[in-house]
Image 1 (tube, rainbow, N blue to C red):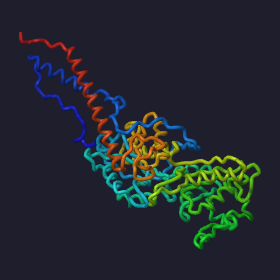
Image 2 (image 1 turned 90 degrees about the horizontal axis):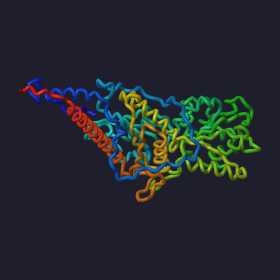
Image 3 (image 1 turned 180 degrees about the vertical axis):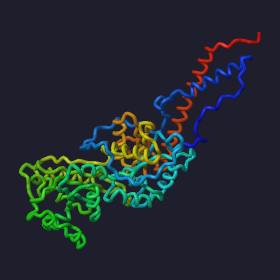
Image 4 (image 1 turned 30 degrees about the vertical axis):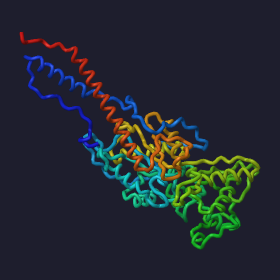
Length: 474
C-alpha cells in the first residue's frame, strides 16, 4: 500500500523541554513513551475478529473419496524470467498487499466459450492497482483445463484478459503430472487433447516414451473398429513396432496411463484405456486372469461437467473417469478399478498451488514467506463440487493460511440452487469477488490498527499514571 494510504500514528508535538512546568514535563514523558511503544510488536491480525459477512461460514468439509496424490516439496512449474520488482527500503514492494492474495479458476469465472467474461478484464485491473486503495494484489490461476503447455495457455489467457500472464502464476490440471516423470521412465499412454499436443506436453515434462491411442490404432486398426485415423492422424502417429524394435505389440509394456485432457473420441479412448487396465502388467493386447495387474491410471481432474459456450454445462473428464471405472466393473465380473485424479478438489493440487503462489510473491514482489506470511488466499470458482469443495478442504487442513472460498454465478453454479459445498461468499461476478476480498481485508486492517491504537493509548495512560513530576513552582 502506498504511504498515503497507511494508517499511521501522528507524531508527538515537538516542544522545547523545560523542567519548570508540569505541562512540559508531561510532554517529555509522553514523547519518550511513544518512542518506546512504537518499537513494540504489532498486534496479530488473528487477535482481531473478522467483520460480519452476509454469507455463511463454510462447514467442515467431508473427506475426498478419490485418491489424493501428495506432491513433493519442490515446485516443478516452469517459470519465465521474472521482472525485477521495484522494491522499497523494506525489501518488498510497498504498494503490494503483503498478507493476502487471490487464486482463480478460469472457465466460468474469467472465460466462457473462449471469450472473456466482461467483468474479468476489469477485475484484473483492480488487482493490478486500479482501486481506491492504490494497492496491487498477487494472484495466480488454477484451472482443471489443459491439453496445451502452460506457456500456450498463458498466451491464450493473456489475449483474453488483455494483460501478461506468466507460466509462473499458472497451473493446468496436468501440471502436477510432471512430478511423476522420474517415477515412470518407460512407456506411458497419454490420452486426450487435440492432435499431438498432449504428447508434446508430456515429453516436455520429461516422460521418455509417450504413446498415444493413435499409435496403437495405427499398429492394429481392429483395436477401435469404429474409428478410422485421418491421413494427418496416421502420419503423426508413430510406428510402435519399429520404434521399440519388437515384432508384436505384446512386447510393449505400459507403465502408467495419463489422461492429460478431455478425450476427442470417447469410444476408442475408453476401449484402449480398458484394454490396458485389464492387461497382464500393462502389456498391450494381453488379458489378465485376475484383472488386478493393470498399471495405474491418472486423470488430470475429475470435473463431471464444465462451463463452455453452450447455455448448459457440458460433460468433462470426470464423466469419462466414471465410465472407465463403471465399465471395468461390468466387464470383469464386479472387479473394482481404482483410478487417481489430480486437479481440484484434490488437496494436493491446492498444496501445489500454495508453493507456486509463494514463489510468485517472492520473485515478483520480494515477499518471502517466512518474513511476510500469507494470511488469506481468496479462491474464486464457479463449481461447488471442485472449486469450493477443494478450497474448503484446504482451509480445514492448513493452520497458518486461511483459504476463503468465493462462488460466482457466471459458470456451472446455477443461481437459486443450493450448492453441494458451501462457499464463504456467493457473488455475481469475478469483479464482485475481487472487490469483496479487498474490502474485507481493508476492514480487517482498520480493525487491527484501531485495536493497536487502543492498546497503545491504554498503555500510555497506565504508564503516565505512575510518573512522579516535581512541582517547582514553590
